[in-house]
Figure 1 (cartoon, rainbow, N blue to C red):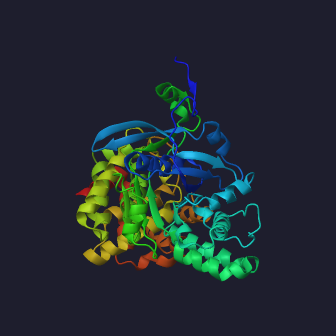
Figure 2: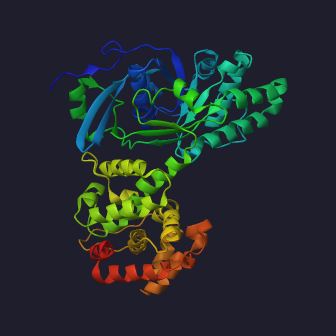
Figure 3: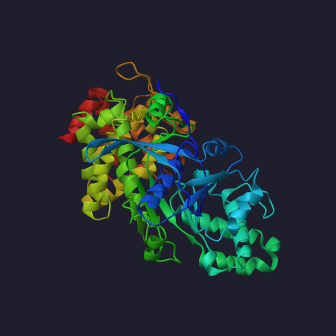
Length: 496
């Protein structure tokens, strides 16, 4: 076995570029997605930027990252145009990493660097939140939006509110309209700190609103993270001892909604990812792309998982390649869910083809049970809106989507699969208890009506689903067939 080298700028080449990007977060996703994209932009365009990573919470990985001079490898695996991809790229666009809990002044001094232009973040869905306990003089403030506001105020003061020293802020947290939420939080902190800001309050607020540009975004790449199982093989392949290797799928998509105070063309010029040939879309509205992803990727996952698992299959890829289940997922995606969207058909077909390639990734054993966590909540947000639109447009219910709900209800009954595999639903205990109680008498009408009528606990704003024309009877029909003939025969009946 070959001797491994330490990974640092003495043993591996590292490019040098102006520090133009502050990145809140050092986790796997940002390094395998955002920094990978920035590296490609540097390679293919005149973007010429490096990233300063800021650790958003007190405990993180900046020390490990700095220990490798912020060098690491990204291993991408998957299918592209039907062909396997297994690439390895050494990323060198991060210049340094700071922990503001130990290096607060170094963090704040970033605001005084004139070439700084972008803030990018991924601080988890809970990261974009307003905490009124945060103060302007904290070192640092605990919440990410408060840290960002501290940074922006320091920049406002350092450059006298100059219009050209505002920032382009690109959050990647997985919440719809993330940029709108972040902008609102910053304004709330400016207002909360009005007394501390004193005579700067009005001018700082105006500078933020006019000359800082907050994008709403949609990000899409599955990133399993550190490949512990294959790390020995990977390190032999790269000849380095890399503690920050990160594995992701080959597919990537980044949709950016332009801020109201910036044109699409201006954002494209400043962030030339499209010019670099990357799958980054800069658009007037993120909403249709968010709806497309939820409907054509998350929706099929939610419907396929219980149907396939109760048919005796455990892995997403195996379900897609199954002679019956493969046809079922095609029906759900192309004949039902796709019919509920309003984007151009060619665009939808291309995206759907990418989704199926991702589902069939030969390198990832994606367990169906991992997708079934909180299935009712997922069905409510990912599938139910499409079911209603399909019914409205076609005058009948989509049978594949309805079967998916029947499969979830059957799965939540618990017990064991035909091959002896335990069935363990994982959800809000109140929901699991409700479904268990409904199943006690084996009265399928009671089960169907009880689940569909649980609007306060499950369906919330959608109300009592028994009021959806024909759904109760169709659900009873599928529940009965699953009990009498099994899941696979029920799927076959839908395909006929």
